[in-house]
Amino acid sequence: MKDRRMIVIGGSGTIGSSVVAEMSSDHEVRIAGRSTDPSIDLSDLASIDRLAERLASGPRLDAVVVCAGGGLPGMVDEIDLSSALEAFRPKLLGQIAVARAATRFVRPGGAVVLTSGILDRHPMPGMSHLAMINASLRAFASSVATERRAVRTCVVSPGLVAESPRRVLDFFAGMTTISAKDLALVYRRLVEHGLD
Image (tube, rainbow, N blue to C red; front, side, top):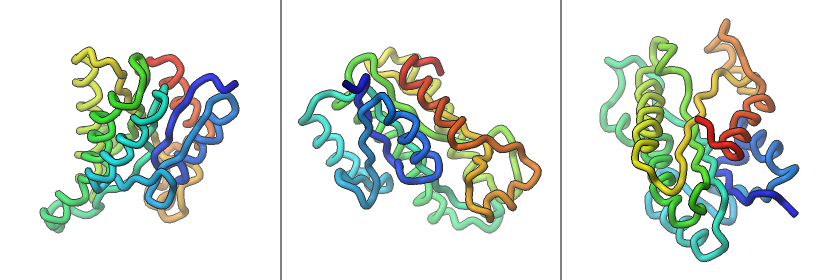
């Protein structure tokens, strides 16, 4: 019998697929994304609500893990603010909406594990939008932790993942990498032990 039941949103991406591979050995893992069943689009709040309703109609999960990317690279003077607001939807607002909805389908004591990034602590030109998203997610998780919710909210701030596309690796040339497999162990620890 599998130890825990969870869903990984974005489970087919670079990080998400490694989390799924790591966790599937001893946990029951489902994947949700734009082209899966169940499906979810983190830029669409109604989609998040539909997934939450569907999951709430079954047995409670032990965790939901969100491995979502997104953001709007560009120099701050060149970013269209309307586009910037829209680009907040999937990675920032979408993950916050999942964390809010999780109490409907994750058991008390279970975990919501979100994904941010390192650009809020390691700034780079043209990455202010992504830095804002990462800082906001980290602040959100820290603040929610003070609310004594039934479900824990944690955030993983991965560094540069070695299996990232070449264009990403080239852009961040010189930065230390972490393998997606090693990074998946961080998600495992948060799901199983709740230390954030």
